Image (tube, rainbow, N blue to C red; front, side, top):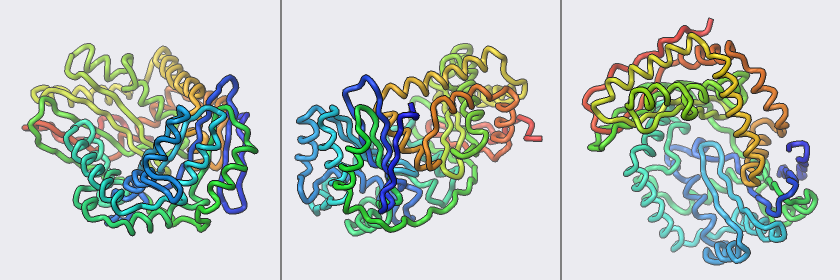
Length: 421
């Protein structure tokens, strides 16, 4: 529980947060940098992700092979990811090996060498990753959806970058991006599991001593645009994402929107799944999702269907959005709240999930949020709250991305739900 969290802010600006979890013998540790795709200049697109790859390719003290071997020699796991607002580097280890993990993450963030031969090899790996993504329509459609929703701005650019930019990016560009954004004021260090807070602080003070201490530059606000993109491909299915502007992490309607998504398309009992797959057999996969950011967000509905069923599918989705005006039953509300609360409580049992949660809360809110407080907020959401959130979201201009053997699509229209009063 968050009541066990301890926080230390070092004089150099670095924030360290730990949570001791009882009855576990492992620990997850990570460095969470508030820097991702939205912090890139146009000509840098893909650099944040490229940098994440290069961090594992050797330091002044370790080769790329030694980074992997030293962690796996003790049965540990090391990995990283790049998102639009964050890049994370993390390990999971047995509790007695935490010192190795802290030293490893600190080493790759402060002493990576970016050797030329490793840089060129990883350039090839990323180009293969871009090619693989382009060959996977239910992957690239989300990039196309994001790009259409946030046209010609950092929030809309693909995390992987483009093939042209990656082929031409230089080592110096990565180093400059890292120096600019990987700073003590822009990073949260987190650990969860069988940990001692003071031990972690002492380890971090040593292993992250060379992290730059200047303030990172601010990011540009995102402006939602909306619109449509259609990509013709000879595929067995047509993939569609329909979406709208949603809420940021800080919005008062956050929990109402999460419940809206759960009830509309969050599982096998959801309205979209029951109507579109179970009753009509139009799809194999259909779901809704919410993607909050620091200053905005997206609400989306994904479906994959046969080309001949597109003309039927999209009106059915519109019909389900119209039905939202009638509200939800008490049984639906209880089920949706149970799903959200169980997902939250189950995540507490995983040291990796908990480590990431407390780090993200520190970056977004500046403090952690007790689990009991989140559960109370979910319980307080009423049917009227969800309807208010739905009206607010579905009154915004729609965004639609489609990939497949598309001949004709119904016109893109606003959702037929009454706007907010």
